[in-house]
Image (cartoon, rainbow, N blue to C red):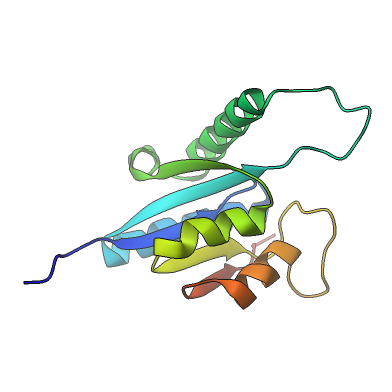
Length: 143
């Protein structure tokens, strides 16, 4: 007898309108597929010399607070409680691909808060589409 498991959905969150739409889309998909969602938000040390130094633990905490706030502002409380939150250190594309290793679906926004924008798709989304170990859904924002 095979073991039944939930449909695993990973969604990238950075606070942009596009990532919020991706989160809402992932919640709707989870309802349809009896899925479980892991929301991933990452951080990198800035390359600015005048940036005030923070410890990695402080950056983790600030990122976790931001992730919790974004999720709370974006989805219903019942959905919020069911979402697993993951804070990752490093480039967002790598963090999403690592989280998607055991996922059935990766959901990303069309354009986030990255350092530069590609003509049609943000750099993180583009990288995920080209390298993800599972299907990728790119959600356009409605603004």
